[in-house]
Amino acid sequence: MSVAADLFFPRLADPDDGEAIALGERRLSYRELAAAAAAVGDALAAAERVAVWATTDLETCAAIVGSLAAGRTVVPINPSAGVRELEHIVADSRPDLLLARADAEVAEALRDLPRLDVRLEGAGAGDAGLPDLLADEDTAIILYTSGTTGLPKGVMIPRRAIVSNLDALAEIWSWTGADRLAHALPLFHVHGLVLGVLGPLRRGGRLELVKPFSPESIGQALSRGATMVFGVPTMYHRIARAAEADPALAASFASARLLVSGSAALPAIEHRRIEELTGQRIVERYGMTETLMNVGIRSSEERAPGYIGRPLPGVELRLLDDDGNPIEVADDETIGEIAIRGPNLFTGYLNRPDATEQAFRDGWFLTGDLATRRADGYVRIVGRRSVDLIKSGGYKIGAGEIEGALLEHPAVAEVAVAGLEDPDLGERIVAWVVPSPDEEVSADELVAHVATLLSAHKRPREIHFVDALPRNAMGKVMKNALKSGVAA
Ligand code: MLC
Ligand code: AMP
Image (cartoon, rainbow, N blue to C red; front, side, top):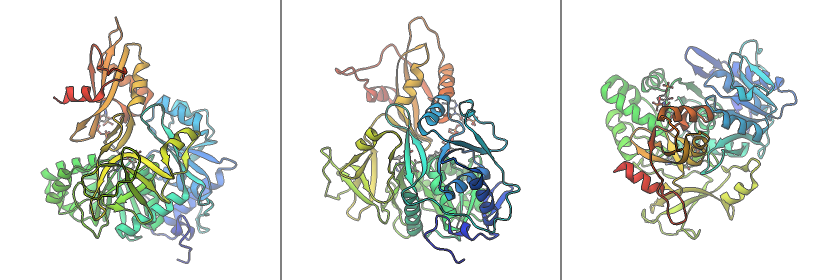
């Protein structure tokens, strides 16, 4: 291959018949993917910002790769998003076009957008290779992420962040075109899209998409030759449970070159269970929509349970004390907020200069995550600044968004939402509801109500009806008191 290494997808610029992506019985070679993606690019006409209905499909990959290669900005859409989220994303990001698999039935809230059906058939031979029209600071992707309050914010991720971050991960994991990645992550977040789809394609390797997630389906991908797995801790919890009962499944995981976990804390106990069952020590890495990956265990270094490793090449990390000053000691005890600087950072929140300004101090991005640091630089995450951010199944969920949705129901007078520790999901969403006088409502009705407004994963798993919410002297709900009341 005679292509420049600084292209976004070198192997798509000079494509061959090697396999790029597989999903079930369907396969796309680099040549076919280049052709399908080029056809998408040609059909975009004047559209500059495109929404992509991000089902787990080959068409979604072709739509995203084709749009990026043509120099456009992609807004991936969660197909299970609720009406409030969709209305907000459309109003905020104002896409010129919606790209969807030809047979996909998209949500009502998107039907007014001009639509381009994405088809893999009839795209031509693809010998010409894919263009590479995005500049370094151009926004490649806008991903919506929940905050503590209000509606999700659009994180503008430039090409520079993606390319530098994927190359840093390749360096620490010796990730090459010889690897074949299996993952069952959704394609509308950083983990499944940037790392999981763009990563293998940038390396010129193979990607096997697995749908839906199950320990067995990932195990089968490994038996077919996958070398790496990307997953969230909930997946590894379920893999360990299944492998305990099925030695053949455990053996398929033993064959992997690298099992990687991220998006939420991997409990040390899960790390050890997987090791006992498969002989594999999971490699953990820590990231965020705004920063892509910051810290990770090198595949050649110690894989210590509970630690996320050292900053990635090119990424700077500081721990800040409560006054915002850097903590110099590295004693694995002193806790500070993680602040990040580097080429991996986003450029800002779309239409939210106020939020962008608040997120930075002196050029450092404030993550809200709390951690300690060991003398050798290994970082250990111990918690999060805000009780209003929940991580459930690896999804970030703002308590305020769910509270807002529940308050739209006439039977809800007051509400508080928080995450309770959960062995499977990490945290599960719990709502405490003060019913309106003379109104009758069941927990199931309220869960269904949230499901119409917001994504499926934002539904509360538990609802407690209470007479009043505990409040401090300022009138603020004391969520920790509610949490310890249930935990007790
Ligand atoms: C869920 N269900 C409910 C419910 N919640 N039913 C009633 N009430 C509720 N509150 C339903 C589900 O829809 C599903 O139904 C069934 O219950 C089983 O749910 P489950 O077993 O819990 O599975 P589910 O939650 O659907 O999936 C687990 C998971 C998923 C791990 C596969 O959470 C997942 O894909 N997580 C990945 C998130 C991710 O990619 N995060 C990355 C963010 S980027 P049915 O009918 O559908 O079976 C980032 C940066 C970084 O964080 O560092 O990476
Ligand atoms: P998101 O905004 O959805 O990208 O979620 C980012 C958040 O996920 C981070 O701020 C962390 O709280 C959490 N996170 C990601 N990776 C890890 C990890 N390895 N350990 C602990 N928390 C993590």
